[in-house]
Every structure is written in C-alpha cells, then in structure tokens.
Image (cartoon, rainbow over all chains, first blue to last red):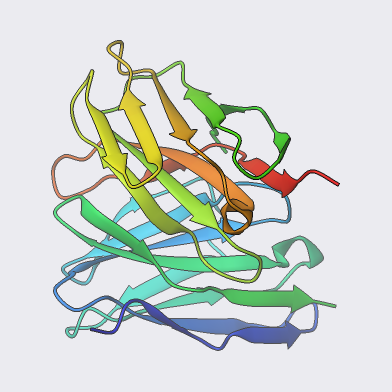
Length: 111
Length: 113
C-alpha cells in the first residue's frame, strides 16, 4: 500500500520564479494538507483541500496557491519566489480528521 | 505561525535510559499526535490520542492526553540507538470537514558521546 508520495524530492529555483509541487495521497484518503518546514522548526500549516476546494488556510500570502484533482492528488504552487521560501514542503493526507500521514517532502532551495 | 510549547528542546540519551518529553498549549485540542522525523524524511506517526486522560502505548513508547486537553507527554522506555531523531507533538481540532495540525518545535534526541 503506497503511502503519500511527493515530487520532486529536491528543487532549486531562482528568486522571482514560480514552482509547482505535487502530492499523491495515501490510498483511501480524501483530504490533502500542505505544510512548510523551515530548518530547526516544526511544520507550519499552509492550506488544506477537500472535495477539490480549499477548506482552510494558514497565515501564508496569496503567492501560495493550490489545487486538488478528482483523484484527490494535489499541487502546491508558489509564485514570485523569495529566498525565505526555501524550506521542506510536506504534504499530509487524511480522511475525516484521522490518519494524518506525511510524505517525505520536497526540499526547495531558492537562490 | 502558532506553535506548541515542547520541551526539552534537545536531550542526550544513553542506551537503556528512559526518556520523557512534553507539550503544552494555551488552547485545547480534541486530538494529540506524536511524530518522529529522521533527517531528510517526513514525520512518521508514532501515537494518536483522541480522549482526554487517554494513555496509549506503542511498544516502548507511551503517550498521554492531558485531562485539561492542553497538554500531552511522550515517554520512551529503555532507549536504543535508533530512537535518535526529532520528536514532534501536534494538536488537532477537527470539525466541519476541516482541521489542521499545530506542531511543537520538536525535541531532538541524540546519543551521549
């Protein structure tokens, strides 16, 4: 049973560029949440998708946007990248508030 | 962003020792979760707690959901080298098809030199 898969694993982008990260949830899960983890910190909630809609959002600017597809997979898009956006981006899937399972993350470096 | 108060920030362990860490919040939660994260990996769920006062074990790990719903602790008994890593607590309030995890800053376990 595949868990949460994220791609790519690593990414290097230049300031001002745009990036798209992808996530496939664990089988049986219908909710996808995205988190940003800076070095030495706990993950910070970005937003959550359920039934292809953004249901909840953390304290992140509009440069961060997302999408959920009918097969429950999800994308995270970040526009106009800043150096401070460098972090590990984690995707978590769940169902009805249960079974929060994380992927291995995408390490984004902005130069 | 909001983070829970997790302590200690770091600790050194010697094989065979028991380890304790805890997490406190100014807000109540209806679920507490404990995760372990190894370098370059995502957090892996260790224990989930759903009721105030609940005490749950997973092998050598034991966690409790505080009766005030504002705190939780995790104990590791008879530590082994593979226990090294970063442990995170997370609180969750789920309702209306939404709910997000609020994390602590983590407790880093290292082996005593």
